Length: 478
Image 1 (tube, rainbow, N blue to C red):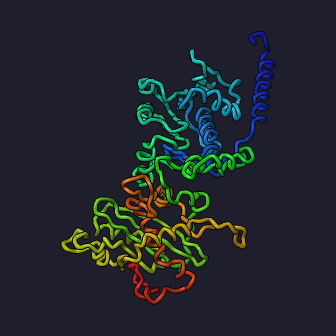
Image 2 (cartoon, rainbow, N blue to C red):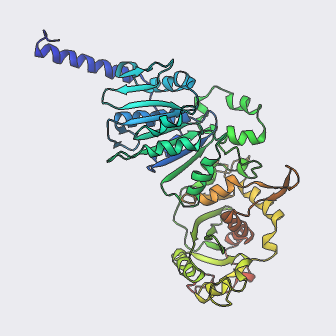
Image 3 (tube, one colour):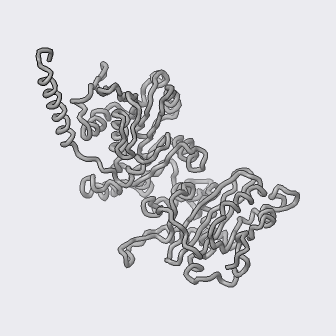
């Protein structure tokens, strides 16, 4: 090179750049499926992806690694700081050569642009990029001190992993001026702590730094061998299908509704509620945990819409004020229902007054649920009916279930996906009864379905039993 003229050096540089361009041009273009795309768009510090076998989890994780290493995310069009240290945590070293390196090479010219090191191992355990970024492969069976002594910017975990590793590696994300992020991907066959400590906490609103994503293998059908899903399904029990095909957590045995629910079908984009269309509010009060409230409506098109949800730990009187603010807007609220527990004396935190008494004093016309509203057998039938996706398409070619959940309501989604059948105490058999003791939002939906809101919307007016001042504190009549 020292003997070349300036013009010759520039020409050689142009040739090298053109060669790189052509190599990249030959690479397949990544087009995220409908499960992967929301993951890439999510800007939460921690993202958890629970997906079925073959759903595209590794491709999703590999692209995040490459974007962090090169400093640019083409999906969000954002630049990140480089050089960066990225740890990819795997359950077995065999996955490096068999899965991860082929996946990375598929999208990026590793062998021409990076230095791959084995460091005395029989497998590649480190990738160095020209800009100084590095990818370090680590494994579940390594000594604890290996995890404790490392500093990193980004973490990608492929398949469920022990909690002790989680604590050690997140401790290492402490570099000053760094913006650490974590991507947890896998088919949730084990490690229930991920659900209990992270997924459930995010669902309950206790961790606003965690983004949750679940998708089935169906979203990646076009990239799989023809007939793979059907053939693989034949080998699985119904419970295994929920986990290996649907991405549900394996430890939640006896799931009752998960097989009927599909986020891509039942969850729809939020829209402005049509003026004059009826809605009901259902409240589930508690003495030792947050009170919950949900709003359910219907537009007369045959569907029921789960509009929004609300939770607060405030005492009854403060909760009433918060609830009124939450109910503000051009809603035609025809009924407000409260679990009959709310009529218990001394639950309002003010002398002998009940929770419902306090709400009424605040101007919220609330009624308690009845014995008929609590019918479990009737609820099982009704919730299954509204979740079921019809076999026959409508006049527009759509197969729409009767229940639609507007985006922004993660708690009801978690309740539906994780609710199980009750077990008999003496053996492992299940009762034909849902275990909704801790499913507050599903309990509210239960009462909402019992309100007959769909029938009222089609009728165009409230039946005589509801022809009274609207449950809204506005005093408007239905």
